[in-house]
Image 1 (cartoon, rainbow, N blue to C red):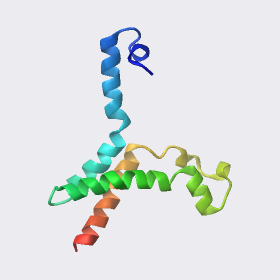
Image 2: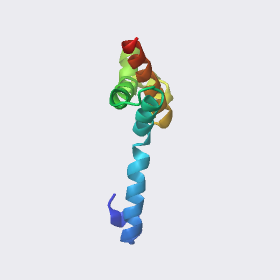
Image 3: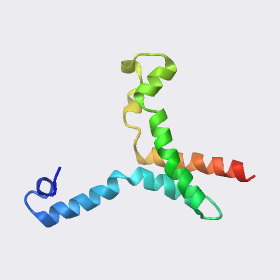
Image 4: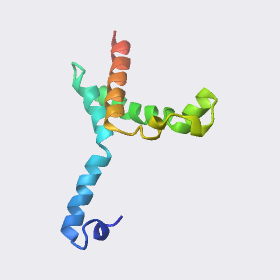
Length: 107
């Protein structure tokens, strides 16, 4: 969609809608990074990078076609929940799982 389509003819409204969408479309990634940083003591860069890298890994591995291949079932037999895994909850789980990986490396 273009600014003209989103703002119903108003360029400023379209611009503000696009700006809001840019944040909301990537909020799961922001949660992955934020949880990973927020749960560490050092509040440093490696936690942020691990949260950022962990999110696409989890969403790719848990994609419907990959789950079907792993379970050796047909794609239409995969649970519908795997069709919508790019959400804030998965972002938080990603941040926590990457945090556990960092803690395991440090100890």
